[in-house]
Length: 472
Image (cartoon, rainbow, N blue to C red; front, side, top):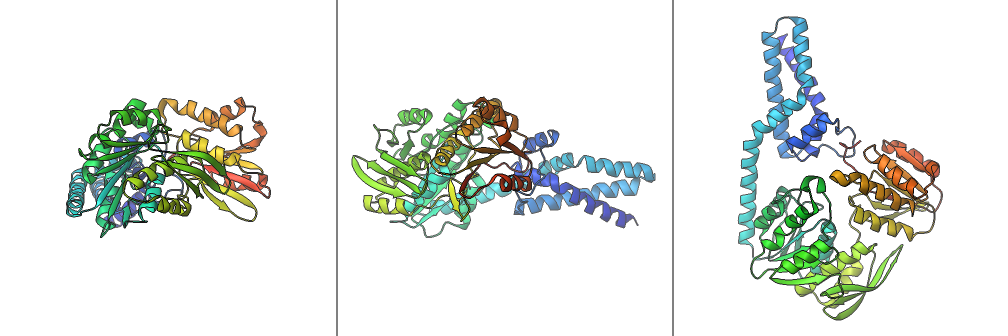
């Protein structure tokens, strides 16, 4: 009977732990952030983000199960009073977040050792390869610039780029070990949430070429200040070799300051006094066309990509591709071939309506671009958004501004989740948007019901940003 009780308790305990384990994984295994979410009741309660059975998670779940077996064995073996035993078991269920924290620290040395081993293997592999290595960082446009550059360089080289948004140390390491083979070029997207993250990635990849995209206040909640973000992004040019080559997207003042500070070979883009920029820009619902001015030469190009931000990304990527020997003719051909990056101003059309999927955007600059694209369409315009997060003290102001911007373009607004709804609502009303045309939805099912209620043939729906399950 003892072992039956233990088995039942452990099974129920692991089922109950699922919600907390999912939140733990969604916070990137950062235990302090995990516990903060628990105390604020920001649990991963939905199904937007699935639990991913990585090797690390499997190790964690196995360790948690072993700890649970030990705890319930102690309770069932040594506590003989039935009511006290039930109380102790219930207490273990309530304390599951702290048990998860304990298992996290128990496994930390093992995970650290495994990480060091993988990173060393990746460094050794890269050291054996005679390839062009390119690092890309910035606040906005990293993934799009990376994808665009890879398409351009494929005209001449065999290219391996980090997939999707694999921009952490382990994401880049996994790409090197699993994807990199007989390639000529390796492009590594480099993301950061804290000082030192870009330096770590630069020392891993050791790129000879680098791109700095637009710098803004993304993830300011973890960085603390725009100045700190700027210094973190500067870790790429700071750690370039003496003969390194940097391309700076001059679309932001921070990037321009870092351009001025860099002493190596450098190129400034999206500035009339720079190496490359766009002129005569025409943006329509089906794409864009413009003159790409590249080192004084004028190249008329067309692309299916939408928005000024994508044009700036194309110009920046073209400067690097040109430096690596891609001809103007091949650049024009590659630009015409470009496909939208999934969930980043991606147009999905059917016989009834048009969807603008910008759900992977999470900053006010990108939101402004998406709304500009929406304004160029005919028909009823609907914006679905949960707003922008990780803005720290600026969160209310940023989402108030977002609400005002939406009000100037949309006919209907559907606000998802509670996190920013009051800020977006206030911003929209401040621009005289009709309150009766603003809806709230906590679930995708409710969102679908509202859309079915207000949709008409020819409507255009912009899905702007999406939040993980731990935001309500």
